[in-house]
Length: 148
Ligand code: HEC
Image (tube, rainbow, N blue to C red; front, side, top):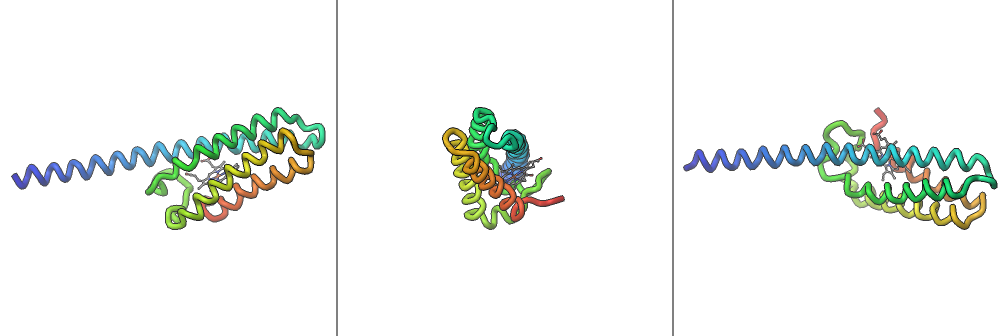
């Protein structure tokens, strides 16, 4: 009896651990894919902005829309414990979760703002909104992303 109970406990323990690791791996992969896509869209906007006043607005709007979606998708991918594995996310994220999730929120706000400005703002406003967005990227990376 004791043995059966013990085995059952052990099995439960292992399956929970394996499930957590699988979830963690999937979450890490998902956020890295999302970040890469976000970077690609930032590059598209950067290139378009070089044209100044004659920048292609619809290209910028389209990419800004994608960044809004991506940034909203990120919050669910930083699941607890997912600093282990093939990731550059610092453990500190989960110790300073309030600050980190606030930053994710600010990223969404900055992306939405760029989206709005891309439809109605002038060239200077567009430049400012883009800089405000990329400031969010570098600010968070400096604190929460490992360099190597
Ligand atoms: C709230 C924090 C935060 C913000 C804001 C943020 N990032 Fe990141 N970024 C991270 C973390 C943490 C990682 C490491 C993820 C991992 O390896 O699991 C990362 C990784 C990346 C990577 C590497 C992905 C890979 O594995 O190749 C790219 C590219 C990237 N971010 C681009 C951006 C861009 C572009 C922005 C802004 C539009 C941005 N990030 C905003 C936290 C942030």
